[in-house]
Length: 250
Image (cartoon, rainbow, N blue to C red; front, side, top):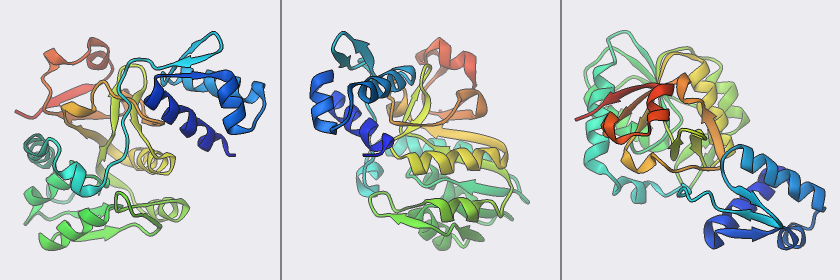
């Protein structure tokens, strides 16, 4: 079993039972005690669990998972539209934009109609909305992840390398002061991180439900992005405010 698969099994068990025993993990994962201990140590360093004698327990933070497009579309819709409007106001004619797959980033699209821009996305749902709004756009090559209608994988990274962006708008499943910006899928995290590095300015778009949650794979440090959210500064952790710039979408 690969390291990522072991880590995901451990985190799923923590999310379900709030505690795991070392001996149970050794049996379930069919691996050595030293390997499981190393896995637990790595996950603790990421803030995803807390080591205790004989195993590990939940940190108490909610764990963020992937949902289908229809499921996500129903969550925080008004907030996502407000975030989308503010994000779009930062875009200027002549910009080259990377639009990450996601239902929050997709709410930027209706406000871009008529602008002289080019958009690159890895989201099939985003691509459909870009076409509907007659916005010049490209979609990355790569493997399709059916659950989220997202393009990922090595081919997507190679495709992304062809472009440089004025601005990137990235989604996340979890944001916390300790674990930074995270998402459940390692391949998605790698692609998001790569897009940030290829952009002059990068923005993390996130509604209130993403704060205080953590997920499996780190996207970036909070200092690497400006956060656009519907959460007022007063309601955010002071540690988050100190690490990044916050733009509030009223």
